[in-house]
Image (cartoon, rainbow, N blue to C red):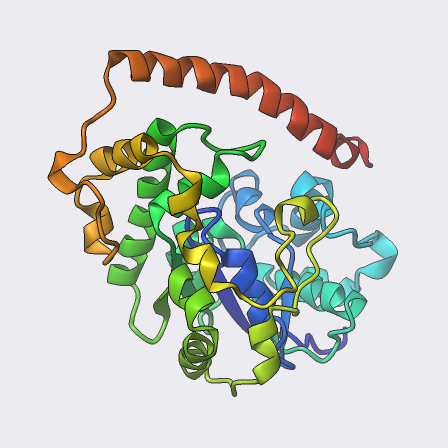
Length: 320
């Protein structure tokens, strides 16, 4: 088996719609980095393998990865003929590094030595990822929860109302803040979406120092990742230079009552993260009628979104 070129890992995580793909595209523009599509499968198959342990059956792991619909998004051949026999005698980390190296080669990044993974749920596995890859670095990406809600509600997955979006954002943030407390400062760093789009060069230079790589101007253009066909419709801005106006777009897209409801449900949490409140303690919680409307809307959208998602995903499920 040839040497695996991937030597280091950068795991970006945070609440979905916080800019993880944008940051992945920025870092992926560095000559030493290769950004892969989201890799939810890497941790989700572990329960079927008995968890993360030294004696993982790599043949079984590879077969589970092949069958996982999230891996099919990568559009990559990992048939038996393509897998070196020596690989299956190594360990799970080496297997993942090999998969990323093969993907990077298909994207013209065969010389990349750093894997950039922008799967949002990485932040909920931060300790496990560092255990699996001791040299890994974690980037906790934070975005104003009101902006996250505005971005996610129109999609065919995730919460559809402010009453559901608020706890969704809080749950993701809780994983990130806990990871920041648990890991050492040299293992994890917090970056905000707002800094990324308003001050891209300064923010990227800070990140490069943390990652111990040189800053390359091409990174600011966010052209280092081509979203796969499955997600391209949700990442139409990737490949474009960051636009500072995106940081406050939620103020124009949300109604005053939507903003008030979100602030009432998250209370002081936005303030802890230095996001100014518009209502503060004056924010009124949802009343009975609003609560009923939320439940009805979520139920209605569950069916509509399920159909939209199936139309977008069925090819991946049917593929052998």
